[in-house]
Image 1 (spheres, rainbow, N blue to C red):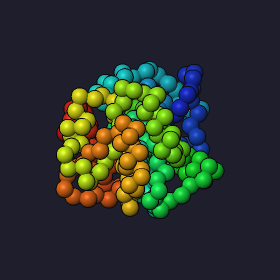
Image 2 (image 1 turned 90 degrees about the vertical axis):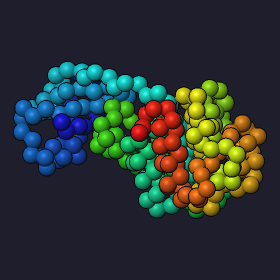
Image 3 (image 1 turned 180 degrees about the vertical axis):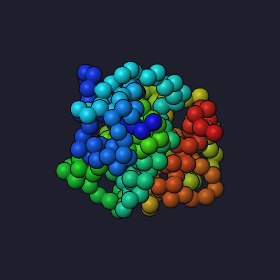
Image 4 (image 1 turned 120 degrees about the horizontal axis):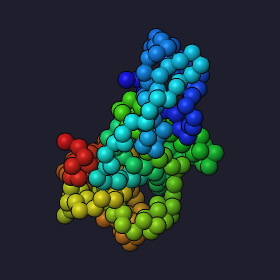
Length: 237
């Protein structure tokens, strides 16, 4: 069944956006065809295409809740790498993505540019959720500082913060995430975290863990770490 993202709607008749109407026309769907609507917060509905919009017929069952809630703090990456991470992390089941401003990051975004880019990233996440069958859409924050990241962890004391560090030979990520249903995974930029950032993160209570002996690219490391966390908790594989 074809799916459409329709946030915060009410009533029995939903009007598709111009972009969605164009998409339905490309699919050559005729009145009477069924479409699944999802609101990005976990609710799904079966709707029927009509000449005056989409008629909501029934609410579909909720998906099973995930066993692990993972926040991915991804250092800002250049080019299309950030969009790739957001797209694939959404498909894998991430709960939230925090774009992290770090010292070695090539990309620097001020407030206005950061807000604009975050809006673009949210659309990427919405489309990825539509394609992969998720009924919820992960929260995509605007670029955050280390102070904001630490504040997030302090506000959620049950969430274990883990910083990916190839030099952390004594602790593998699979061991660090085990037994913790709320996680935050911090991934460095192309040049890695600075020494100052590493030392401060450890003082703030994050654990340093590695994925193994290989040094992965930033856009690979976050997705690999997310996959490990989901696999350990029985969500993947």
